[in-house]
Image (cartoon, rainbow, N blue to C red; front, side, top):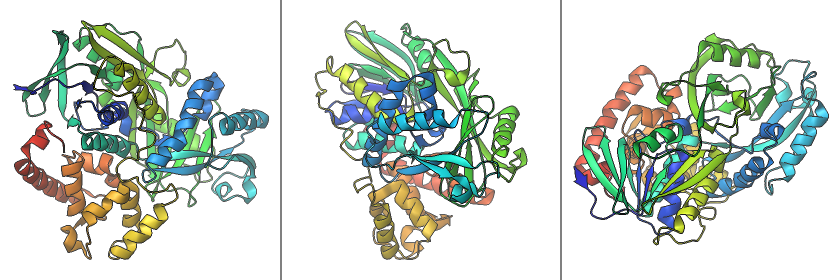
Length: 516
């Protein structure tokens, strides 16, 4: 069993977006921080969202004006600190006769434009779908609609970059390490943990942040603490099909049962359709799109698109479990997407628990959480900073992606345009560090497949805690949609080699006991 040499100021349990956000914020305020995650970063809910930074237009129907306002304020803040992984997206909302009337949609969009301090994003406008690019793929009965703004995010990379920034500011990050038992002794939290190799660890800390997402109540049990809220686990499933429209607009569709769903351009060659809302039983890790959910999304899409979408068209599905605060709502989609932060003092040692929340609000949630702790942890300064400091690779203007891609094309002409686009949007300016003057694939250690080089893979392993092909293909990138079985096997060999080399060169990084 390994003991840390001195207590941490903050031990964060949970490597999703809230946990990584808290670790980043606390480390940047001067605290000694440990982040532990039972699996990979963002392996759960935080990599299985609809990939949107948005206010939640439909939440206005449930009178959650405060939640929508807060999220809308965060949209442009997050775009400003991470313009590589976040970008504006224009949505088209067709009016469907017999459902919500046009005046109600226009009123909702007017509020959406004005309650959140929108500055850079373009405003809503009414459109005639007969003369709009987004109208072509739709059935001819859809004539009128609206076009409005929200944002797209690479959700898993958002988590990784928050953890990377936390580590760069002094935090220690341990993935694949489960907190098995938490108890208070002499005014300190003692956390007994075990990694995926069976090694046991004991960490001590002046405070603990429970950011375990769907496992938030389970972690409280391990800490012998009583929850302040009950949770409702709701499964959201998505399907991915081959691209069914050529333009870059996304769609916001209404369904006859009152629900809504999105159809979004995805990874160049695909369309992402989702999401469902189903109460989930069992472990979150076992969440899977049911045949009924797949059929529901296909039928919904077929109500709008000229080209029917069938289950046979689905090339991939994923499902995430949202930990929502139980508020007595009947239908899952009506349950609040709000959050609660509760601070419990046990023998003078703070245990802060984050209940609920949504990806768009993560930075604000983290800031509130650290503010709560700052009154009890001397090492934490009270200065708010995360809304002004870019995430790794995001130190360029919000309109600077095109210039960055042009720079990479000029410096590395052997890279294909889709690869340059992916690299710029995944790493921003940080790609300069591993591209490092390369003038051919050999200088990057060779191409594994689909523009993924050995140099990029090494960066993922040594700087982003990637250990497996799933980490690489489905979270650090979305290249899993492109890789064949043979290419995955080739990637597995390279990954095993690089992980072994990195562990030999810097074993403490893999133990998570020092910075990456």
